[in-house]
Image (cartoon, rainbow over all chains, first blue to last red; front, side, top):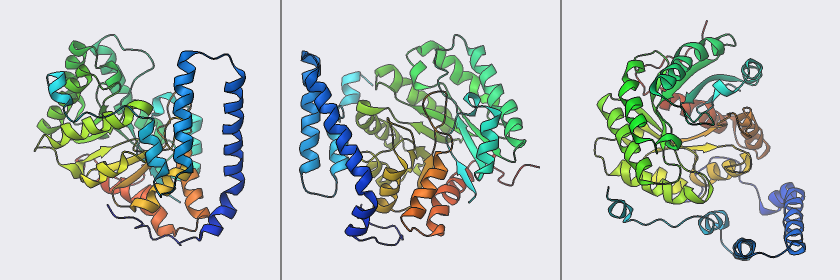
Length: 90
Length: 270
């Protein structure tokens, strides 16, 4: 499916940053504080697995491309097996 | 702006919520059958629930000038009880001629199990047999991608399913594309924390365009905001989108989808 089809007024990157900066700032601070909180907690095997997932997610945020949200969602998803029907006997 | 909420569970909301929604522009809504927060124990429990959805709620909504429509099924969370699910599916036709019934829903998957898939397929057969539209719930969080793909496999594997009469709900960034590409309608649920924010919904409208795209609040008994659609309207206006585009997403699209059901009448109630 091809990209932008909406008839909305096209905003410049500068306009979007101006409009979104404070919200993005607060969200990234929340994330930083959450990671600090995790580090202050007692380490367990389960927590480190999920911590690792968060680190992979942060790598996606730092990567270029227009589809970070989609890639993040896929990272945080169980995989799809096209053969699921035969595995389930359906 | 007048709008339609195509997915909201009003049995869990107060009469004050109806009044607030009316004041914010809600003129119609549809309420899919869903899980009560506990597993119901018998087919008669569902029969009473369907009476509530088809008798009581339309009257409560009409007091505030809102049209109330509904969808009937046994929710995927209860599909592990296959025998009860089959009793409910056999009973549903008793209600299909009620004037506010739009079709079968919200059917779907929850944890993507064999029993859930079995009952989903049997709901599809019911819908086809009675020429009903279908509203589909896709799973939450980590299960959403896998479950949505499984649901699309089952829908596309049945040649009797007409994609333009099926709404696949709760799409997000990783599931919207395959749903739209297969010709189905897609619903974005504006739900705090676990689904989609008004900002991300607006992003998806900008990326994919408004065709066959709906937005809903899925307001229910859990953390949810029944006035979420006005939040989306506000966000779209904030970004400078024209009123015609906003109206298409929040009014014309759900209206067009609803009008494909045989029971639909979309004038304001007296």
